Length: 423
Image (cartoon, rainbow, N blue to C red):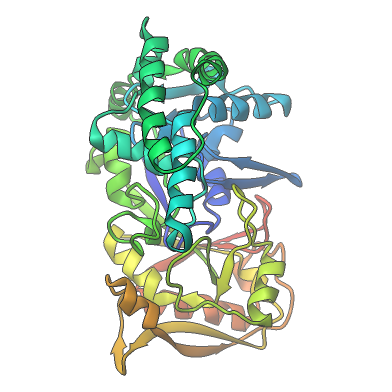
């Protein structure tokens, strides 16, 4: 049987999935992006050159891999074309091996305008979205009013777009936002739509045949489990299912094709935007983690909120998704620490809690209960062998394994493709 893998983020996104996917794609035939949109930012560093991918699967940098944007993704045609062109300028032409699902929904300028107007209308209670139009697009999908990539080939596409712009403008006006000029929006959108139409395919049928042929799949999750619309810190979440369920519904393949589930975990914790964050460090220690880890959003550039590793969150995510192994990233960021706390439980109103509360108010009152581990106080940057890691670094990894009951198989010791320990 072929060896298939699913890569999921187990925190609030930004765990380093791009690097892990890039490494695994070298032995993969088909890389499938299954949900989310251009709000994702997967960073890959090869030979010192940094590439940030938003819609394209991270396997795009490997010439052998066919890249599929699945039906669960919401696709901004202009963002997609810009990303394809950026890769081409760097010598990577992906168009001949890229397939875009005919069932994927389109993100249009109307969705971006709706996103901005909605956030502005919420004031202090805003979610803190990336303003890429993702939520409004998924909203249209559920309301059954959206346009799909298969519609890009329709002869009356301009008329459909006009009707969509007019409907969106009515809502934007009600929210007090700035409406879109119909003709200008159409003029700016249609060229990208025409280009994207050339990539549209029945990806479900393609993947079914690829499975029959025994081709190896790598399924790429976007964001992280704690941003899942059902199991994340609702309403401070994204608008899709970011776990294994989203991979199944967003690819068109059944659970039988999923294979090994690899959960990506940063050696500490970060999140962007609003919402409860029990382990957040609002002091010099948090700022030091941010600077050493270069914790600024790949999509928005916003500084990330930083804290110690929250194992309550990670264990919750592991159990939800049947995680088989862990890729622990950015371990080298902890190099200077003499002591490293890890959160192993919460205290809520005097009660000890060992899982993630669904109630937002309860999670906001949660105080982390820490176990303090010894740091290694030396650089592990670029380390590639388990035995070369300091004893304290190995003990940190082993503690994580024992707590989660899941093996750590990959350890990141730097941003580069080669700066990795594989066990």
